[in-house]
Image (cartoon, rainbow, N blue to C red; front, side, top):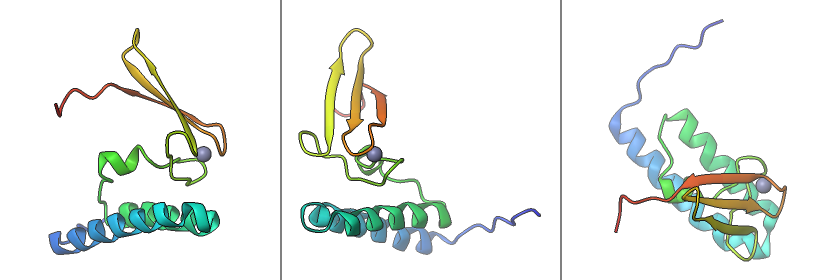
Length: 109
Ligand SMILES: [Zn+2]
């Protein structure tokens, strides 16, 4: 069965993005108090992104673990290392052990 992909109107995407950002802020706040709830928020914001075909802002995308939906905060839930030879940032989720590698971003100085 093929899923029909209907294009979402722009205003819907805009609202979706606002909800994603709000949920991300909430998830950050809840991380210390209710880690389970925090993960639920992350799960939810990712679902919204998928449903409305909204790409997550880069800083949000890199601050959540795709494996376990934990907000990645350096020194708390994540270990961050720089690999200067390969010019990559290595982020390890301390919750599930998943490792992410990103190239250094040079876009914004
Ligand atoms: Zn994880």
